[in-house]
Image 1 (spheres, helix red, strand yellow):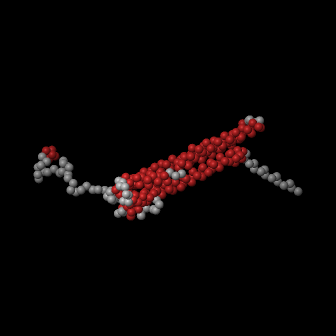
Image 2 (cartoon, one colour):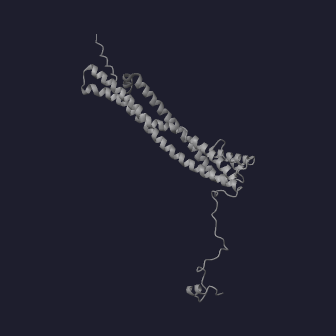
Image 3 (spheres, helix red, strand yellow):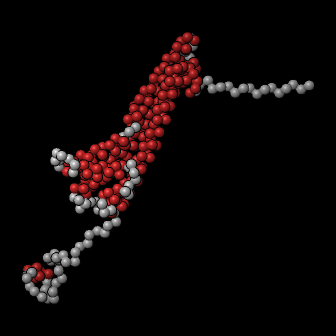
Amino acid sequence: MQNPAPAAPAATDNPYGLFQALHEGGVISWSVFIILVLFSIGTFYILFTKLLQQQKIMTQGNKVRANFWNSPSLKEASTKLEARSAYRSIVDDALIAQDQHGKLTDPVDQHDWMANSLARSQGSISNRLGEGLAFLATVGSTAPFIGLFGTVIGIYRALIKIGASGDASITTVAGPVGEALIMTALGLVVAVPAVLAYNWLIRRNKSIVEDLAAFTNDVHGYIMSAGAVKPKLVGAAPATKSAAAPTPRGTEPLRTGMTGTAAQADPTTTR
């Protein structure tokens, strides 16, 4: 009777690693890990939602530059914009402010009233663009320290175990200390994307706010001039020089038998 083949040795679990470090660190290490994971999820959620919001406003800005000012009136032009959009909100607030000014019992200069109303509308949009950026700044500044806190606790526990065992060799020290340093690495992994996303979104917001400010100024000038002042239309032909414009002196064709010097010396000579 043949003896059964010897069973393959079971694969040994990795004694070092993230989950081993969390198990050794206890409640504190798990708490730090969960906080960092939540920070990372919140960072990418805010990044993608803000990019979508910014892209939507940029697309609206392109539409405004293309055909908004071609309309005969501001109210009709507002119908070309999407409802509840940033540019539509500025136009609607301008029309409301224009209507409200005629109902004021205490006379207020229309220029100041319109300027304050448009500034309030633009400020509201800027505040919505900045929502969530404070979270990114907080994650970028605190995540490394939270990870460092987990590392300190891990090293503290590792040193206690080493002291209790009485063995301070490099093979005994390297494993637990290396596990504790994983928390510092996790803190950096969470912080770096948050800082990059914050700086990128801030730069895009600045460009969007500048475009909104220019559009707000155009709307203000349009209303104050009763439609006479508005931006240059896209695709409009440049102004050409009038055919009746006078010819600068010295550039007219010379008559027969007269040099350029003589023509300049006697400009009253007739043909």
